[in-house]
Length: 297
Image (cartoon, rainbow, N blue to C red; front, side):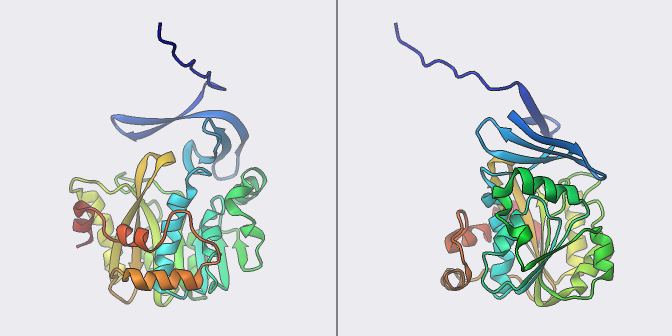
């Protein structure tokens, strides 16, 4: 009789279920809850998953995982930095677990990073329970944190930035409540804070593969404020989605930078070699599927 390998018993029966669509779900098996608390703004949960990675969950939605945060944050941060080529002053709206600032600090040219986060509990919780994500960035001398609502901050701030990263918790662009507080007024305020050759970048969830008029109308809001728009995507296993980002330029047409120039730039600027993105990866990100290209027109 043929022997079969015994099935290893799961360490718990705690499952987090996310609805990818009306007919699809994705589940995570949680082996250990490291923190669960209700802040003034949201429910914060930090867990260990069955695959031994740690994850940040906000309002029952997984935000990031130690297993693949590089697959999300390296494209998110390095693509706009590559296009600016010499980013010195950075604004990050939303602290998250610190991964966005962690990646920004890999660039030698970066002098200042302003993080705007309304919920201090997110930062303190992540620093205590998932420090491998931020790698000390919150205590870096280049980083300053303002605990303030992003919309209020944008209205009051008078500094100019090379890159603005919008890293706040968003629903996908397919939802009717899309983008929450991101509207034309907010985008205009952000655009006014960008230096010449400045870029803004934000996540827009999954791009609908069939023409979606609601999604298109939201992209048209971006196009009404910024001169040029570019969509790029990265598959993130822990999110079970092909996460897309939109890169926005205030004063120039966004074109793919030649691979040779990207290689030279990364060799010159990066203090730490990325795990996911290099010059060849960048070229792939900037040449997405046809249905995504169609939305950019």
